[in-house]
Amino acid sequence: MLHGLRWGGAVGGVAAVVAVTSGLPVTAHITYVETNHGKTVGATATGVVGHGTILLGGSLGGLLAKLPTRATYVTRYDIDASGNYHALLLAEAKAGSICLTGDVAFGKFKQGASFPPTSGTYSTLGGTGLGATLRLNGSYRITAVSGTATMQLTATGPVTTRPGPPKGLPSACRALAKLTR
Image (cartoon, rainbow, N blue to C red; front, side, top):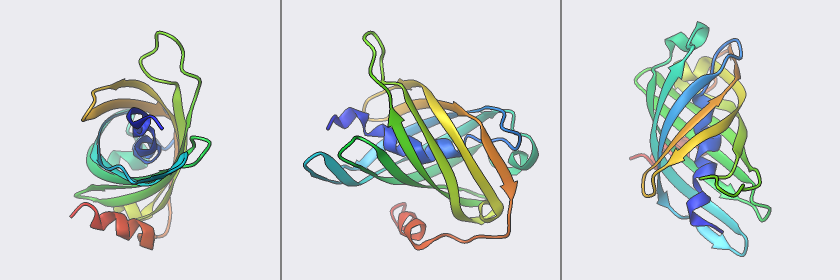
């Protein structure tokens, strides 16, 4: 397991905030700090935890115009024996919170590249305030990575955003919220 590649799991959830109502791309500038390396058994890791900030830019129209452009987040993710990342992410801002589930895939590392091709998908599980009524589903790709202890990532990707009846935080997301205290 390459410790430096663990940031990808966080991105599975983080990039979910990269969203627009019509599927147009939005860019997210993300910071990530790993705060718990989790438990590694063989080729798997469970319970990896990190946190950071998300700054949105781009075409924030429709429902997304109501979202704050800056949020803090905490993520918890697992890495299976095949190197697949499965993440939960809780993003919080004054307007509320939104909990996302996501998966991350890494492409083949190319000589001369600074990071492997990285992409993922995500969807909404629930939230509070404004986040309780948003339904996000989308995909993203990482376009830039820098830093070591605090990583800076840039992600872009389209998303489908629609309103829905309020859906609260599931228990796994409430547990994530406790990690921020």
